[in-house]
Structures are given as structure tokens and as C-alpha cells.
Image 1 (cartoon, rainbow, N blue to C red):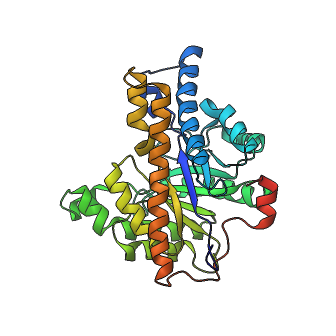
Image 2: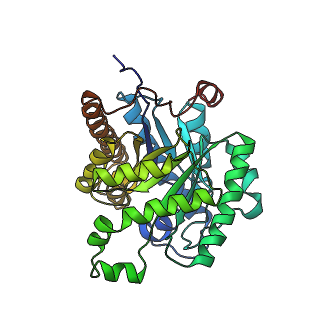
Image 3: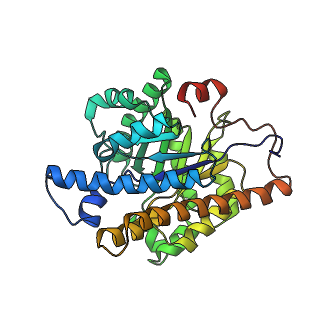
Length: 331
């Protein structure tokens, strides 16, 4: 039985990587040939088939979705939407330190072409970093935020990365893990608040994993402050190994306001490399992706259930998408 006040989770399989597929997966540089472009598209189709297999094996289709780019995954975006899954599509130019629109001033045309459930941006932002850079990025992001609010076609998913500044690393004695554990969460909170003040209003914050429950609570509090009660947080995988991602998911699931995850490379990178090298069949690769994606969902659900048993969840929390949105998107 679904508990009273139950909030549907959101489990996203992201494979919108572009530069990392070109150079990291296949070792290609420069302008791609038609055959190379098709090869990447085929690799992404393998991942999508793994996603579909996970759903076929029992995952709730109302809670799952794919994040894939237009360049290599346009057909997948259309297929996923037709099948009723949540879809997300990136708006940022790949591999840039500063956020820029992939299609410049035509960004709205491309969003309207696919009408994804979520328009996603990946942004590197440190609140104690270059102030001019932060202001430029915030201005572009506000433009997108205001467009999405006015158009009403897609929700806003914000993938936040907070790269450490040199001085911040010094405080952590040059140890990245120490920085992550002792400094990064406060920077995440400050970033969220700065962007909100700049008029950037995501519906979902896709954030780096946190090791401490209290840090997760602080991030949720910032994301939902001043009446932003419908805002959700999900955890990204950052390419970490299965054990570390699992720890992050269990910690986040124990906090009301974290409703799921968007874990990609941990699910598909190694299986896809084996397929690329002829060490695994296509079906073996599909099976591996499906199993890992489903395993993370089960882990999150179990941790979430433990929270419910302890009575942590508030029954007044609204669903991720309202009924009108669900009907419009077929979600």
C-alpha cells in the first residue's frame, strides 16, 4: 500500500554526455564524420535499451526518465516521450567551464522541438570564485528560467557543480575528499541562495552527493526556502564507483526533499567500454546497464522506506508533477 503523503521519486538515467563520448569513449577529436556520429548514437541506443529493460523488469514507469542530448539522441528523446517516460534534454554547450547555450539565442526553438519534461543545464559555479563570471552565468540562467516559467512546456532541472577554488583547497590541505566533506556543502548552499536571488528558479536541483545527512538537510532547506515548497533535489553520480554512489543515495534518501537520483556513467561506462572492445555482446551490455540502474533504484527505495517507518516524511509534501502536468506530458 502506498503510504499517505507519498511523493513519487524521480530516477533518471543520464547519458547526455557529448565530449566525453567523443574523446573519452572513442578517442575522436575535431569535427565528427557521419559514421562517427552514428556510432555514438548507436552506443546511446544501447543505454536506452538498458533503461527500457529495467522498466520492463518492474520499475515504475511513472518514476523513471532519461536525460539525453539532441545531437546524438534526438530519436531517443522522441521514442522516450512517445513511450510515456520522463525526458530531460540539456541546454548547455558541452565541456565549457562557463555556461553557454548550446544553440545560442535559438535555445527556445530546440526546447519546443522536443518539449522534454525537464530542460537541464549543467553549471560550474563557485560563490567565492570569479564574480564577473558568476554574474554572466546567472544572467543567462535567469533568461532560461524566465522562459521556462512563461512557456510552461518544461520544468527546469539544474545540475550544479561547485569546483573548488585554490584557496578553498588550501584550507583542506590540498585534500579533495576533505574539501568535499567539510567545505563543499556550505558552498552549495551559498550558490543556491545566490542564484535564487539572481532570479534563477529551478524545479529540480541535481547536486553532487553528500556524505552527511545534516548537509543534505541544509541543501534542501536552501532549495525550498521562502515558499519554494515544490522544489526537489536529486543526487548525481559524478562518475564515482558503485559503493560511493550507493552511500550518497542512502544518505540523501534519508532526507525529505531528496526524491531520487540521476546516475549515468556508474551505470553504463564500464559495460559500454566492454561492448566497444568486443568483450561483451550488445545484450550483455543492455543487461548490465539495466541491472545497475534498477539496483540503485532499489537501494534508494529501501532507504526511503526506512525514513517513512521512522515518520520523517511530512504528509503535506506535494507531488513532483501536478495532475495537469502529468496528463499533458503523458508521465
